[in-house]
Image (cartoon, rainbow over all chains, first blue to last red; front, side, top):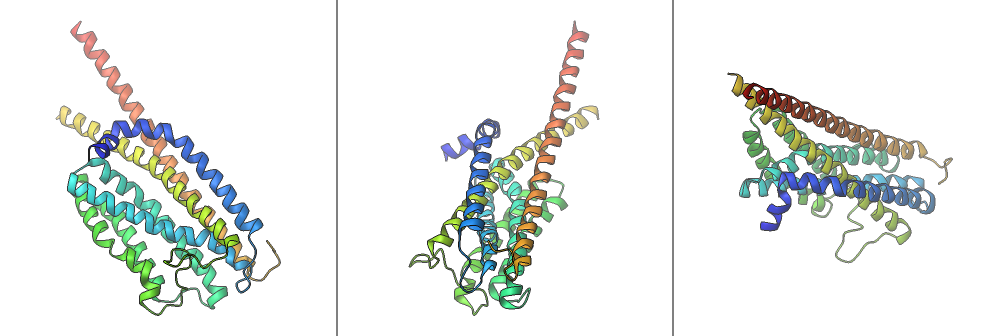
Length: 244
Length: 59
């Protein structure tokens, strides 16, 4: 735990964040440039889906990222509850709006793909419904932080919601295997290897990395802002106390 | 990419909604970071002023 504590010190985090932030942005932009070039200009149209397959390069990474960010929130919440480390609570809180945006994008772009391919914008099947539940979990988590003034109480309740809600992550992942679903089964992360041709798989994986680095870039800034916001709150409370 | 292919409106809409949502998210995060940094600077300046005044009063 000592190395986690060393890096999780807020002041040390601020120094580390300032150093790595420009590099994270450069890697993010480079990955998006390469991923979009390969996905839009080089990858072929699918023999069945035609050009509509290109929606996959923004839809699938958004869905992966929504699941990854919720996992980050759940792990940070466990660390926050078990070790009472303030930076863990801050990391979980800062991740939520980013994850909610990714989840919304997965649903919106999935709907835009579903209409021409399935003939409908939406069906209440297992994958789509569990993904919608994930969005509700994100919004509920954000609402808890907004509704409760005391940060310690808010962090405790929000952490419990994040940890309990994590049960939905494997449900989203395995919903296409456990229940009959209109959504196609997993075609990248499978025990017998991906079933997608490399010409389409390569840009998809690069876009997945680009979304992950975008999350890292935005998350680092959000954590820094949240640390600052807590310092402002403490200073203002101390001044109010000094005046009374 | 063939822009005359069927359903291209759905493809373009997907990329447009992605750009709008991620752009709005990034702008919101940058704006918050800027406002927090500005308030921290103000508090630092006010604290420095107060320390200076209390130093002069003691002298």
